Image (cartoon, rainbow, N blue to C red; front, top):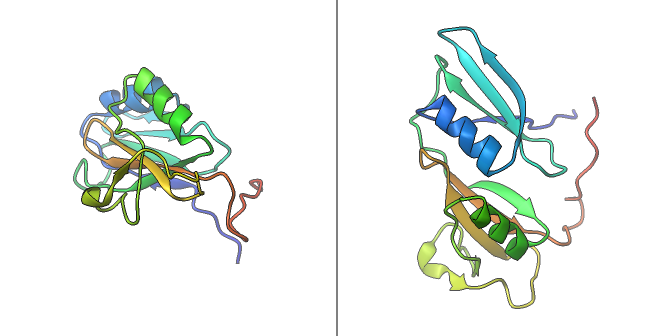
Length: 152
């Protein structure tokens, strides 16, 4: 079996506010914006080479807005990406590292991992509803974790 995770739905309270955040602040591509009056769904894709998009909307079953935690984005330069997000108006933490630090704020050590080892440096932010995002630096992937081109 060959399957891909391509869309993750996130619960939001205000479609327009969320669209502005993901499209204008994060710079994500709008793939679809389907509005049928009582039903609206928006799908956006991050800027990288990955193939997972997010979707949110109105008039569709969803969880409590802000209930998603530790949605993870990957970058090969955590400092530059964090700085760009801050310049775009995103309220993002400083870069941090430490074992378990994305999940346990008390374990966070300021600054990137001293050796800039893959999978060890992070920054965090939330969307307007409080859905939590973790930015992680990956400069070299573990064997078998290399991205592959999407097959369409």
